[in-house]
Length: 276
Ligand SMILES: Nc1ncnc2c1ncn2[C@@H]1O[C@H](COP(=O)(O)OP(=O)(O)OP(=O)(O)O)[C@@H](O)[C@H]1O
Ligand SMILES: [Mg+2]
Image (cartoon, rainbow, N blue to C red; front, top):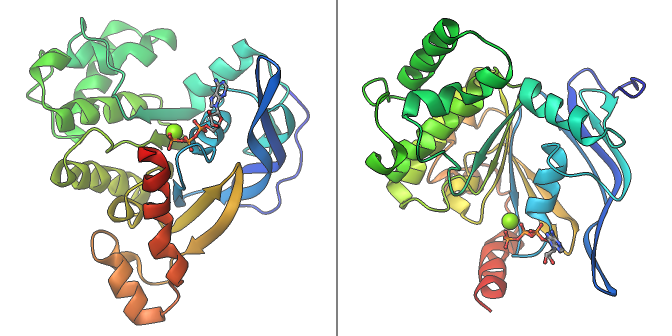
């Protein structure tokens, strides 16, 4: 493990310093992250937004220790993890991080219970304890009566709740969610965000990528990316937590008038590129 460095403040959990990610495609360099500087604090709920190709997933993969920077530093809970090898990164993921993906990433052959238990198997938990933990977590996400089902026998929202339960097995410090509602209808998406909101209220740091303003409205901070860097960060006004959820923009807009006109263009701009 690299040397411990002092965090910027006692609440820092994630910090990127001059973070670059360059993919080599034949003779061409694709600069997916271009000198990003950002700090996230413990217990925050962030939404990362921006046009397709702006580097959102790249940033999530780096933050989630699924990928490494080309240059720059990544401090996770005060430790520089940018130079760790694959084994050390996978150990970090297993112990401290939780992941939720757009396509759920469940194992089709395994039951709900076994899918949830999987990380515990790698952590060396015995079958009895793993079973108990999986049952508790399934109940927490409202799937206590679906333990024996396989993913194909579940709805999309239920599959994503299994993925959330699986992400919680190791009691992660941070939950990363890359477009967690991207494959769900909007009502189901809202249910999933309600689960994430509860987890945030219990103290989990949540970092999610989304294209949808209704989904981003759940976050306290919204980071807009453009061309591999941060375009702007919007912060929720203090004391407006109760306004989380649909309508939050309007409420906050009315209350604070802090929303820039530009925000309204962020998504259409992304979508326009996406569908191009
Ligand atoms: N493995 C890779 N190899 C080469 N280029 C890549 C790779 N992954 C991403 N890129 C490129 O890096 C840039 C950023 O991609 P990224 O997936 O981070 O975008 P994104 O903001 O998540 O987009 P989307 O909204 O479409 O998911 C894009 O130009 C993409 O083509
Ligand atoms: Mg992406």
